[in-house]
Image (cartoon, rainbow, N blue to C red):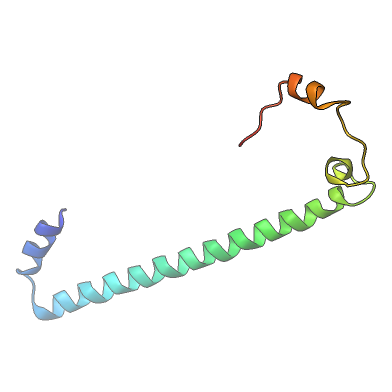
Length: 91
């Protein structure tokens, strides 16, 4: 139904029936708002858990430590070798 059809149908209802519809619509809206808030909390929890799980990979001895460590050796011997490697970035 379109909004126009709904409003036209409401005219044929009693005040009590309209009030019941308003209450039901309000309840539905509150439930949707609560579900959205719960999804947001859950997403934040999952992101935090993923970040915490990844920390060990960046610590000394971790699989990704050499990628960002200031004391690690360069992967490429020169900037020219780096440029010729064909590495594509997201930038």
